[in-house]
Structures are given as C-alpha cells and as structure tokens.
Image (cartoon, rainbow, N blue to C red; front, side):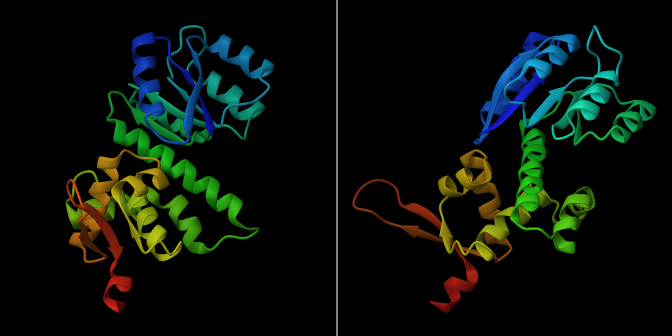
Length: 234
C-alpha cells in the first residue's frame, strides 16, 4: 500500500482529492494537512514517510516553492505532485526545476490523477525490476508526454492515455496474461472497472485483443478479452 499525504488549505478541495486517491487501488491517504509548517513537523516526526505528497503551491503560511524545496532537500525519495490553479510559466518552470514528479492544473478530472499515479507505479516498477534498465524503459519515463501526444494525434480517442495503454499491452505480452475480464484488469492497473473496459475495448478495435462472451447457467454472459496471438493460435 502506497501512502499519500495531501497538503491543501481548502478542506473541501482536500476531500475531493482524497476521494480521488482512495478510489485507486494500492493507494491510501494517511494525512490530510492544511498548512505548510504542519507538514514540515509531521514529516520530521513520521515513523513512515509518504510515497507521494500532493500539494498546492499557494499554502498560507509558506512561500510558493519553499515547501517543495524543503521536501526535495530533506526527503528526496518522496514523489511530489503539485495540484494548483497557477498557470504562470515562470512559476511552473521554477517548481519543475525543483524536481516535482508531476503538475496538475485545477480543476482537473480524476483520470488525470490516475495518469500521474500510474506513471508513479511504472517508475517504481522499473527501479525495482533489476540492476539495469533498457532504453525502452527510460523512454517510457522521460518521453511519456511525447508519446501521449502521438496517441492523441493518431487515434483521436478521448480517455486513452499512452502510458496506461502500454501498461495494458505489456500485461498481455510480457506477463503472459492470455485472457482477462475488465474487473481483473482494473485490479492490475489500479483503475475503475469502466476505465479498464475502455482500454480493453480500444485494444479490440485495434485488433490487439479479441472479445469473447462466456455464457454461464444464469445471468448475463461474461466478457473476456483474449490476447489475439493466443486466440488465433487456438
């Protein structure tokens, strides 16, 4: 379970962010903090540091990027995701140079936060898989935004993120999952069942997967999505 701390002075907005995080499998909000100095104290006293901190830039008792600077200097292993309404280029450039993991502009859809968390899981997986990485692994980290734009330009499919799409394909190709339901995939990628189904249906349209219906004795048929290479061999 990956622990997440939220730093947001508006308790209503903080609750929305918490609900978004709690809806994703594998993540749990363990602190919901209003002030910057409160965060600094809790970090210093924590028995278990968070994996991710979601923070606004405008926290009443601290100067803009100073809180991020403190986190990055004292706790470099923590991934910082900024969630802010600020869109000034100079300010964003400043915090990006401080080493934030992602920047999300308010207001945003839950799917955008899912993308950030999926990228985090991919990053952790790459770092833990072995002593060395491939160029493809690094490209998936450093060129994720470019790949996303290519997918948007080429497919024009709303709601399909390039990183998540590649993750789903890798599950079938690399992890040798020959067939999955939407429920099973949602558990593997930490998303809702409807999000998982959207990616599966897209891959059916791309002829990467084949959808088959399994009829039981009662109830509606169950949809299973089969890796097309396996399906054609059979």
